[in-house]
Amino acid sequence: MPKYKHIILSLPLLLLVSACGNEGDVEQGGTIAEKTPGQFAPVADEIPTDEIASTEAKFARLALDCVARQYPNKISHVLSSGEDVKSPQQLYPIFYGCFDWHSSVHGHWLLVRLWGRNDVPELDADIEALLDNSFTPEKVAIERQYFLGNDRDSFERPYGVAWYLQLMTELRDISKGSGAKAQKAQKLIETMAPLEFVIIEKLKKWLPKLAYPVRIGTHNQTAFAFGLILDWERAGGDAGLGRLVRDKSLEFHRNDVDCPLSYEPSGEDFLSPCLMEADLMRRILSKDEFSAWLTKFLPNIPEDGSGDWLKVGIVNDPSDGKLVHLDGVNLSRAWALDGIASALAEDDVRRPALDAAKKAHAMSGLESVSAEHYSGSHWLASFATYYITKRGIKIEPKTEEATASDSDKKETEE
Image (cartoon, rainbow, N blue to C red; front, side, top):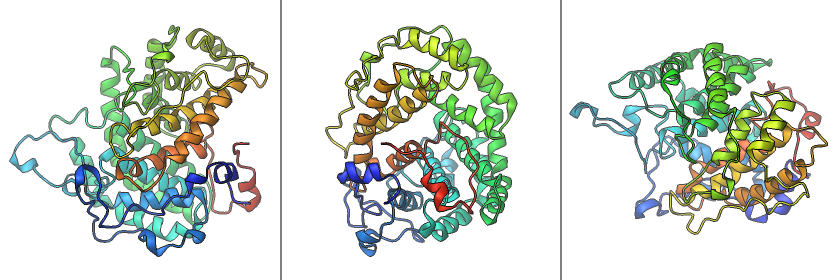
């Protein structure tokens, strides 16, 4: 029986095309999605469906395709002079693909996550070739210099830089194991550390000046980013930055009550402001403290095990780059609900309702991950991987010697 059989059996629409479309596919705005020469992933029609080994492999192939695809591209770039007019790959030679910088970062994270967990051994060679090509001292130096440029203090803050730290978290977890992958992860950490250092210093300067939380459901939200940073700190990141984030989280959220969950989602959300805040606070408060805090913060969680208290987000046009965000909100809600439940006592009467809502959102979100529209395929697989591998709940070093019995023990949905 394949891993994550609950996904395969209950979600027939999750039979994904193995890579983003061929060169003739029309994508956003009617433009042709250009692929950069030297693509690492084979095109879809070269891989028979019956040879696709796992859900994870489908996700990995989507990421392999997009991290090397420069166009279409949406850059967030301050021009200080005419010399700053450059292509995405010239501006940032590692994270130029997947439509935007942050999506490229978590596309790389997806690949490192699945590679380090030994979930896609059939793609190890492709992933390692990608990592060797992406993470070189020369390219990291250019990425670092970009962050040091004029008027770039807020570049990818906090969402993109938090995902970069999550990528470093993954590598540190892998490096704690043994074998060739652990050794490779350690070398990659050393290569990528200069950019990590710059990001840490910028965040340390920003956080003391941040007077209010950012409660929106898109990239600037602070709660989700803070959660990633805390997980990074616990995996071996900078303790000083972790303290700043923890202190800010308590300052902003300890006394929050009655979060207006009925107002969610807004039309372009991919993160729930209420649920992401709760998922952050369960990382900080003790079990008893969190349970009491949650009662005041989300007082309307049912005690009857029902799941319809939180409606699944609706996407009316998955080719629209903004509207498709709602597929992401379903996936991120699923992992937040999972995280919230994990911090409550086993006999807490709210857990069945949290679990029921989680399953409904996960089903919808996972069905949406396909290669049909680049507006979603360039990022949704990362969100799906974060959910199915329970990234935010457990931080565990993985080794390439993991056995089949270890894999069988991984937590899955019933």
